[in-house]
Image 1 (tube, one colour):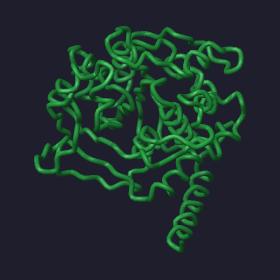
Image 2: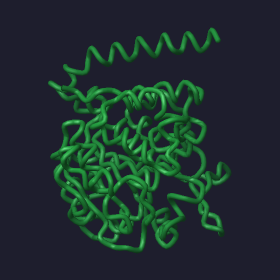
Image 3: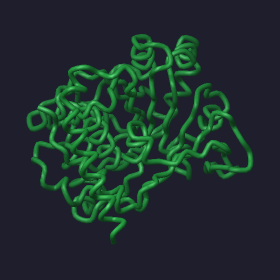
Length: 323
């Protein structure tokens, strides 16, 4: 109990210090803060919405910069409109959006994205189900950035990176502009399910930059304490209200995607294992093999307990947009 109280006190001091520095950071951006392209399969789970909320809260605090948002699913057209609704809620409705134009990858099930994407009156956004091709947007975003400064964060099926690498200009841009790829992954969903299996090994074999994989989050339950108190015009709250069996807003949902996003801005909260590699098994599942090293593969795991991480993530998810 005393350790938990000390952690909460320290967390409060850190949050207060960041809040005091936020306006200054936004006025004078740090040249070293991460510049993030967020790649999501918005709609498969509500933690994608929670992760985008955390990303905006960290951007509001001056801890990172959002360059654009990529929607990776071709089987549910409305995820891109939900991304636009969330971006608009946080005052960033002009962020570039990209969308996968194929239909071979993605979860066709939808419990919240169509409801949110089509309600432009409530959420004030203007994109419903159409955005430019993701490779075109990736290239445009990367071209505009300094060399070695971009973090690509995938919290869904990362097949878009395969298409980017298959494009000669895209591959060259990845090699010169990208600092690292941070992925929510391992197991059998993001790297195997819903059509991703045909792309996974090619991506692992050909990705040329440092790769950080974040598998944690199952025991970190968020979305049910502070998020319900946010306005009804908050599309993230609506995503949790509608998702799945409609219990996420009452009992919380696992926070896999939020954990990966948090690592980008606050690596001090994580351990980084540098000896090992992400490996694909014959059944398609991906694991971390600590016995075989890959010099550019890293495993990241939270240092705080699941309860402490949930407190931190919930506060960021529910934090009001910067005025």
